[in-house]
Amino acid sequence: MNKIILFITALSLALPVSAKQKYSCDDPIPYCKNMESCEQAKFYLNQCGESRLDRDGDGVPCENICKK
Image (cartoon, rainbow, N blue to C red; front, side):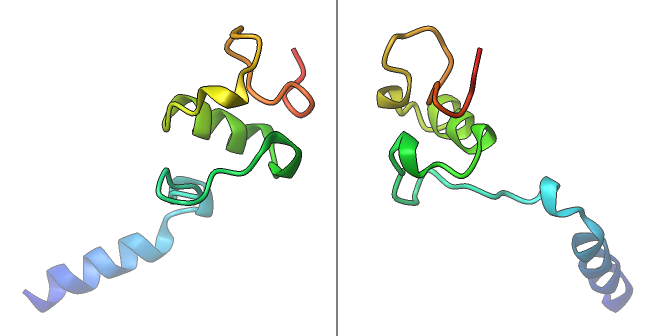
């Protein structure tokens, strides 16, 4: 049992940062001018359904950051 716990712990520490959840729908959702990246804006639009980030409805959030 201890070996399994040790293995799982080691595996979780070995995961790259990109594989870990950076954003959460439970976090306060920033306005476009406060987004850190296009990746962040896409997350909030696609995963959280925050449609205010896509004003023209073309599927591209925060066009000041996510250029077409």
